[in-house]
Amino acid sequence: MYKRRERTACVLLGLVLLLTAISIVFMAPEGTEEWMETAAFLFPILLLMVIALSSRRKYNKVKDMEISDSRRSLTELDHLVIQPDAGLYPRLLVFEKNGAYIGMLKVDHLPWWSRPLVAFRSSFLSFVPCTFRFYSNEGRPLFSLHRQGFKETVVTINNDREEKVGSYIQKEFKSLTHMKGMMKKSHGQEILSVHASGFSGDFTLKDETGHTWAHFYNGRFPVEYTRVFRDIDNDIVELSDSLPAENKTLLVGTVCFLFIERSLRK
Image 1 (cartoon, rainbow, N blue to C red):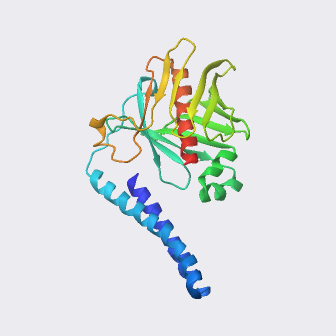
Image 2 (image 1 turned 60 degrees about the horizontal axis):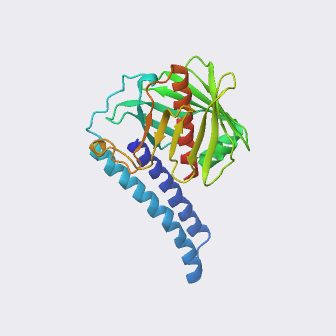
Image 3 (image 1 turned 135 degrees about the vertical axis):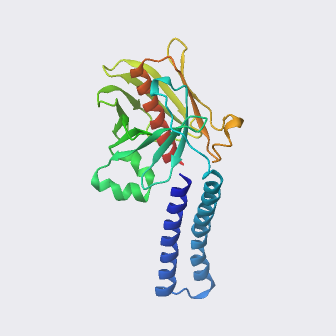
């Protein structure tokens, strides 16, 4: 993860330096004002240098640490540690709090015309139909998310056999203050309302009986595990471990989509 962030930052740094050099050679600044405008390139250059150096430092701290693979199934999980990963398109790495690697959610399909837009600015992903797929640490697909819609986002969630287990419908379009939606079973029955903060992403998902399905509070992470996760964003989501397999897949799929949406808003 840190190695990919460092590599991505270095590639972008090289591009910015190249563009800056071309600008200076072919449109040489004249006078103080034009040199000040050219100096605006220093901010992204310094930012990318900081990201690359920070990622290298973090990588050196954890490179000798053994990251084991999780042996638990989705239905057994009572928490997820979710980390955004660097890449051409947004993706999430998912762990247990002891550092065991569960798997990755990544973009599996995008319309050809939208790929350059999303690669240029990931927030465009909120406007195009796409498919995410969650792969286990063994590379096996566990579930998929098929997103479509514009003003109303409809996410169809399928299991590992590509059978529909339900859907998540987000009603507010790009609201800055909150994300509000509904989880539905495959036959359309509403089973859980979803209300997450648009700023921090915090949520507590409860059904009509008061049973908590999932809880997330930004920044709350067990201090004894910070040795394993040295990044700033240690996002841990508490999950109910007493849900049927179909409901658990629907819940984890919805939670992963909420975190993808959260990453696109930053």
